[in-house]
Image 1: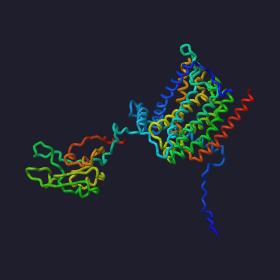
Image 2 (image 1 turned 90 degrees about the vertical axis):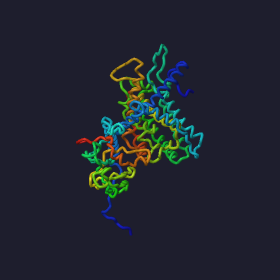
Image 3 (image 1 turned 135 degrees about the vertical axis):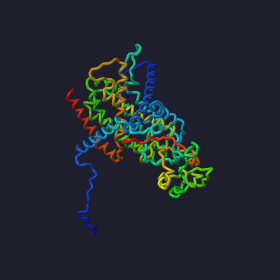
Image 4 (image 1 turned 60 degrees about the vertical axis):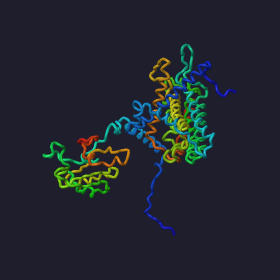
Length: 340
Length: 184
């Protein structure tokens, strides 16, 4: 029995090359998102944001990274050493792995060699994402628990509860798309959006997925795992230096991953509206542009909404989001059966 | 038997208005309104004053670093700077609530005439790390010899450097702070 089928196979050296390219592009995007976030947050609050390091503050992320990496790798005496060091690695690895299945374009001929512009095209795309999304929470939970600090522990507990509450709705929100597209492959889902992006027929699915995506990435307004006001820094209270940098990095990479998934699943991936069919090399830029828009939305929401109370988070997840996602999936299922 | 509060009870409604659909819609509407508000802020010009390059302008009556004054000109001192207005009366020191002014007076002689009065301030020091910039010295002075200037950039590396002597207070100050214009 095979667990998953991979849609398109290349030579091993192309796979290695692709891995390096995607890794490089993904990793260069993170400092850009970091800078964009700080600049935009400043603008949203009628101030400039960082503008001292380099032209227009462009070197600020570099300064941040250098600062973090030259700091002491502090570890509290109550921490569980091995797990404490492992947790940020889990976070960052799952984020990078999830990034690998976001398609930036279909199979293209590059110098006569057909290459798919994605890491792998697995036939279980969304399931793969949810699997690694769930593993990513181990990074937070282990980090919080292994720190041996009450703030970290509380942050980790909140993270666990939040994961259970919101991943259900997220999965159900995607079900509607999967029913309509009839495939679990992300490139297949994009191809199925020729003519109409799924944001239109699956608008409620889009909303639910977006809200659950905010919760999944632990971003404001669902950053209860961090909650700097009451939990100091939540799961990463005791982290410093490079390990904190890993958590920080993973958070922004997760923002990119969720942006990429929303782009792929609801915004038509590399497809353009009005029947435009540009040459293949434009596709990655279309995807990047849409991802940029989604990232802007992430930052915009962070600048706007306050953090809900913990019980509000729970009741919102179970009483509003879950019924909405279920009804959306049910209605879509009925419609798909009726129309086919 | 428990006390019956009667009509004094005020019921506070904390939950959203009943009706799930309406309250969900209301929450959604308010969220969108919030997003609109922040987006509007983004399109505006930031209100930041980029401090070391741009300085907050001050009002004419702003009480900054003190200045000691001389008369504009005095006929018989051979083209030198005018006589000091300060006569060493120590009223400023008496008025100072922070006790940061120290005045030691000395007699003027015909050969050594520093001020227009009988005496002059041989030592005049203001400890600016103590000064609270209340302006009482300026009010107490009978000759308008001391006034408050506009300079607010008064940081230094040691406490000793913040004790301003008479020479420093008499010297023409660097005009580092812009004056607020009409209607600004």
